[in-house]
Amino acid sequence: MNTLLRPRDGRIIAGVCAGLAQRFGLKPWTVRILFLLSCLLPGPQFIAYVVMWIIIPGEQQRPVTA
Image (cartoon, rainbow, N blue to C red; front, side, top):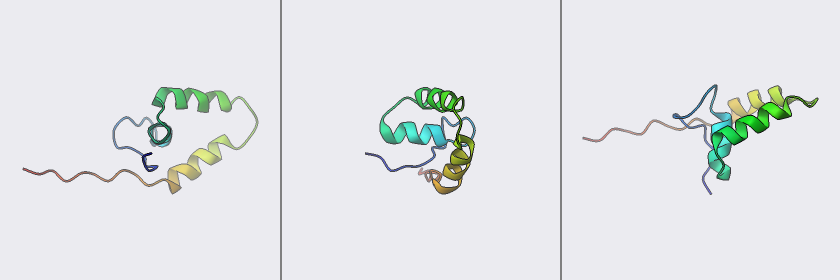
């Protein structure tokens, strides 16, 4: 399995859903829809998203070789 990183490409807000989708082999839109549906339930979804945004490292830019 891949490590958990927020990708540079394919992110909409912070890349948390895209990173989770990449890590678990899902499509990013599937994770985004599941997150939005979970927001209909009571709980700390937005706080968890912000915490993951802070904790999950962003993907490093790859050096360009000539």
